[in-house]
Structures are given as C-alpha cells and as structure tokens.
Length: 406
Image 1: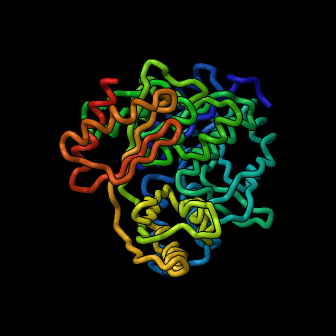
Image 2: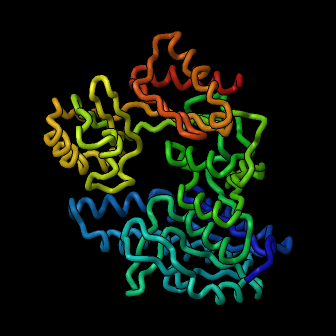
Image 3: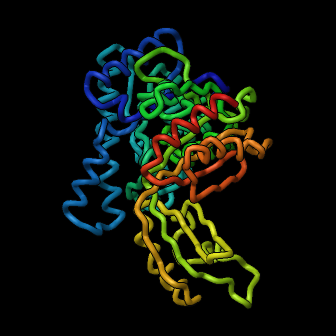
C-alpha cells in the first residue's frame, strides 16, 4: 500500500478533542506537518466525555438494553468528531475528508461491544485520497458487520483502529496523542516524583494496560506486537517526545512502572477442598466455570485453609457469583464472600522475569511498616499485590521509591 515511513498514522483521543478550541489546535498541528510535506492519516475518538454521556442516556432508558442498540448509539460520537475535525482541517487550509466505518468498510464480526476488525474493505479509496494530498479523518472505535450494523471495539477502541490501520497501510509506527506526555513510573497525580519511561517493550506495556494504566488498549498492543509496529505515546499539547512501545524496552531499568487498579472486586470461597477424583487445583476449576474467560483478573488458592480468591472487574463480579455459589455448594465449602475493591498494585518490568530475587526486595519495605499484601502474584514481567484501601497510598509511594532505587 505504502512504503514504511511514507505515511504517518496519528490517533487523537477524546481529551484532545474535548472542545472546538482543542479540535482547531489539532487541525493547526496537522496543517504544520502537511505543509512540511508529510502525509498524515488521522484517527479520532469521540469528543471529551461524549461516549460516557451516550451510554448514560441509554442506561436511563433501559437497565438491560440490547447490545446491538447500545452500539448503534455509541458509534455516533465518532461520527460527530470526524465531521468537525475534517471541517477544522478545511478551515486551516488542509484538504480533508471524514471516513466512518461504512465509508471505509471497517468490517468486523458481530460481537457488539467488543468487536474485532476483520478488514478495511475500501482502503484503496483512502490511499488514493492521501496520494492526492488529502488528510483522511477516520472514525476510531467503530466498525460495521456484514449486515450493515454498527459495532464498537470496546472502550479505548480507537487505539485498535489506529494500529490496525497502520498495519494495513504498511507502516511500522503509530503515534497516539493524548493528554499525557508519555508513560510514567507511576501516575504523576498520585506520585509527584514519577519519572517518564522512554522505552517499554510490548509485554511491559500490555501488563500495565491490563492492570490499571489506561493509556493504551491491550488489543492495540497485541496488534502492534504481531505486526512489529512501534507506538509513540505523546502529548497533544506539547512538542516533547513521549514514550515508545516496541519490541525492545530499556534494559537500564529493571522495573519500569507501577499501575494501580481500584476497580476490582474479590469473591472468596472459604473451606474449599481438592476433589479426590482429580489432581487439579481449585484455581484450575475457575477456568471451567460458565462465565467469560476474560471476566476474572487473577485467582489464588490457599491449600491449608481451602480459601479460593478470584479477582474480577467490578461489572463482572455480580454476574460470576451464581457460578461460584454452585462451585461452593458442590464442594461443601463453608461460605462465599464478596468484597468491594481493594487496591491492586501491579509492578512491571523485564527485570522481574530475569531477576526473581527482586520480588522480596520490593516486598521487604512494605512489611517493615506493617503492610502485608494478601495477594502476591508474580508472573513474567508483572508482580501484582493487593493491599487494603487504608494502606494503599502509603504502599504506592513506598513501592515507587523502591522502584527508583533499583
């Protein structure tokens, strides 16, 4: 389609598009690049909180709306943003045209709310427009089924659109512009001493994305990894370099960052015993339960007390409870308890995999001040700890200081 580097795919998120003034700033930034001879393909999200407002509207109408109808409504946010962005570009002297899912043929399956892109069926039209000097403005987040219904790719799905588009255009770089100027060693709003992380590999960024850092969508990272695409995360409001996610991280820092997730719930099944007819641990039984394999985030089992703990996203926990009650009844467990969100802290870095002795070094300072995580889950490049809400902020600050010292 194009040679690598011949086109730049740039994605601007909702915060970058929140007001008419910000949209005009985006247009001026793109116009500068076009005047410098660059070919740009834009992918944009809905303006500001538009998607949240649309979903809230649907929730006021129905507590259990058909998923198809939710997607037909949610997709309209991006239709607005591509139209006004194309108009803003035209105003500053750039030839521009909006492309929504039917226009570009962004074909997906019919899994409403979490659809997968299967093809860009009219990519040739977009390529022709680019070669004619135009800037296509593509609606992120949305697709269309073979039957013509709108679908959405899931929250943050514009990242997926941008990386998939870069891949199919033959590019090896995708730029994401947001209100943050990169990935930091912690959320600067929680930890003022956080430092920018200049380079992360795909596995590190995937772990951060799944466990509390919402800068990139995990599926966008998976697409990038498969195609060997680097993602440059940078600010919409400054010209500073940001963080680059790619096949190689920064080996100088063993641990890169920590992410905090306060939107999890924990279901505990107490007094659960191994079945005599199987060698499988109860943690393996969770996989076979009749709820989505992506519903749970982590699971642990204490063989001495028979305590099975499963961590869920808040919205998934209530749906999973009936299956866990059945599991408890089948194995004559003592009780099932539901606990609202703990603070789940995930520490990420390639050094955790190569140097497992780092784990006790990270835990020791917490234990010294009486913070004892009730979940310690070390897998590959990620160490996840769950602590009580009361000690969460102190734990975050202490862990961050320890990370910087490694």
